[in-house]
Image 1 (cartoon, rainbow, N blue to C red):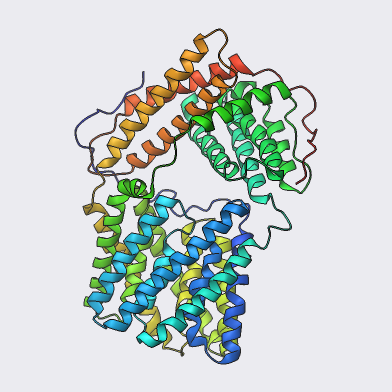
Image 2: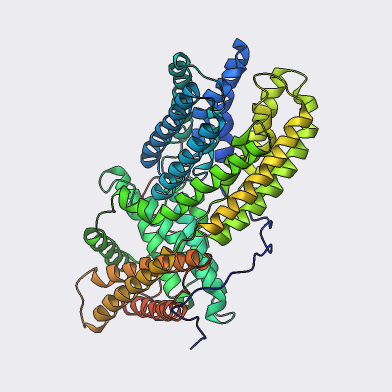
Length: 566
């Protein structure tokens, strides 16, 4: 048995590490989609305002246009709903900011309202899992709008501009649907297959604990694929595609549970076949597929309804409190230094807060490095942009594309483009002194990151340990259920498969919860020994269930396809 941390007491302060914080990752497989969508959504409104000589109104159209950044990983039916809610949320936050700006010019009041809006936006985005980019874009727009002089009579027109651009962004986000109607779910399934193949290929090259991150990544990809597929209709033409993809996701689950009996190259071949517009590959074992899909149906029938929004918001209270306090203090500090744009410090603080304090520290470093590098890039671009408003708009569009194209490599790299773009947007109403803009942005970045992180240290999340205990208990119960069915000579059709999938979900949740809690400070020490034992016994039960059910060699070649249109 491995050594374990105690199950009570207070966890020590963790060392703040810089290792890997700035390391570049492989780009997202669809990095170009949000990048192109952003440009397509922002360009027409900005060019129209340029032609009308009203670039000063661009902030309102950009509020709607930037909604095109969201929901690229969702099937189109779910994407339509999500984008509509994002547009409504963006307009709601903008409306509150504009009304506040029209009623008062007290900077302290404006910062306070901005901090409260940021906390609400953070909590709602995390509870509904809207992202990326999450709450940061919403907070950027609402915070900037607070510091734009308004009158009540102007607000309806400004909101109408945002709404019109939001409708255009919705159309841009939905535009690929007629061309590749099943693209998002095919990509999600391919990612699950590739993640399972990576774990299966690595299995056996070292101790099992060495491959725990790959296994966790595989289960996370499988869960993401299930969430995508279950958003599709259960009946009708799209249900046929859903069932074909479900069989492939089940094969990825089986590979994670029994990697030694898996051919990684076959999983990769299936994933590769899904990338194009061809037919969906068959798994080649119809009886096993039938049992597995019966298990999926049984699990769905027994699955409780998702908790209401207010219950999902409860565990996020510490993160919301961090956001409100950190954004407010960052804005106040900027005001105390005499900087005219305290919303820059506020937005910097809002962008820091992640699932735990360790991740927040990493984001703070990335934000500071990216913003300061972006300020230097602005110094190089500004002379060109100041040659004419058309060049100003084109530079913003180019930086917009660069930000979305690079941000999946690492957050700081995307910030290198976001920062000069935000600075150029402030010049839509008139050119400003480059040196002053650079100084203010650099100071606000450092102030926002420093004060925001200190607020995160002060506001602790003591609920993290309780959630780990609950996740361990849930995993133990799921394992016991699967073990009872394994002890039966002939369990009901689909019952063992449903139990296996339920156990896989519980283990995935346990790992995510434990990782999140491990990055918190000041809380009581986590039950590490219970987590390790629950994971080991759970994965052994998963493997036994697979061997009992269906780990028999797939019949037929791996390149056969079902008669399912892409």
